[in-house]
Image 1 (tube, rainbow, N blue to C red):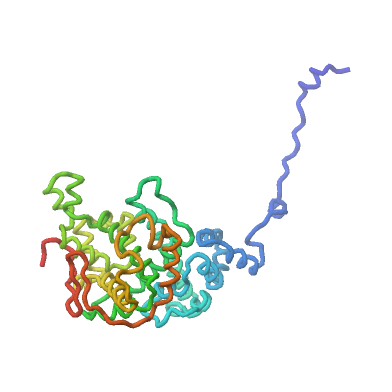
Image 2 (image 1 turned 180 degrees about the vertical axis):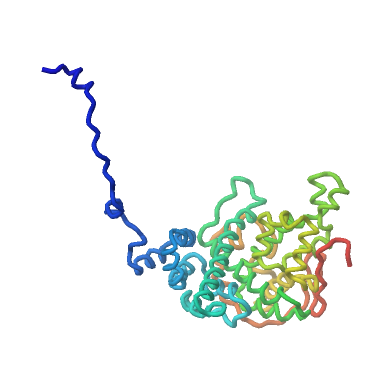
Length: 386
């Protein structure tokens, strides 16, 4: 009879390693590449935009399927995450398209034929709209930082779903306007921008004004600060003059010219691209190369919004606008929820007056800058020049 210690000390024979075949390893597991195409497409349509982008990188086989059915997939994602759909496509498409309409995202995407047609054109069209969506998502994230910049720490928060949709609406209107009235060589006829703004309700213009004023403040703080603002930080006047972008009305004129850039270009500067372009001189050269006519006139969006709001006040016999004209960025109003329910109800009351004609006031005074019909000032990118 063997002792227990002898039994334990004897070597145990090693079992032969089990080598699994590929089929055995995958048995009982869900493999996307083996699913029917219809199921893959159905899964993709229920993803968020970020998830769809990740799914494109799973494999070349998966990417081929998703690219073939991208219009169907993206139409569902756009209708969930990039509303309002009509304004989304007005901002995306090149050139002005008459009427926002009530088309679905699938109908809008069906109108995009791709550059040159065929597979290459289809892929380029998908890449264009994916890049546009990425830009909108980045704007959503960055705008929250700009919007709550002057708030106390306890008042800072993330925007809710309603507020994000209002922000997107303002962003899309701005992008559409910039494409039509700020791009290329402009005329000095300011009645056309005013007619453009009449399409939108007072509530929509209130949201646009918030987006515009908030980004204006961010550009003045992070891209084109005044000499006085720089001097408050570094305390040296000579150095501040080498860094800052003029003072007073001169700085406002430079800011107005910068705001004529497309939202995508401004976002590039606001998230740190300005420094990489090559400082103040490099930034001016880059802008002049990308927009050769940008200094022909200053921006007209501010004038157009304020003029339409003023003429509607006169039509309704109101002493002042139902929404605040200035004070952005603040804690309430604009794209953010109002502080009281009564103020929030004004969004509904003034949400259907778009398209009304009215007596154009002909003059808008903003600070010390005056914009007149037929006499819009020229733009400026460099301080101390005429």
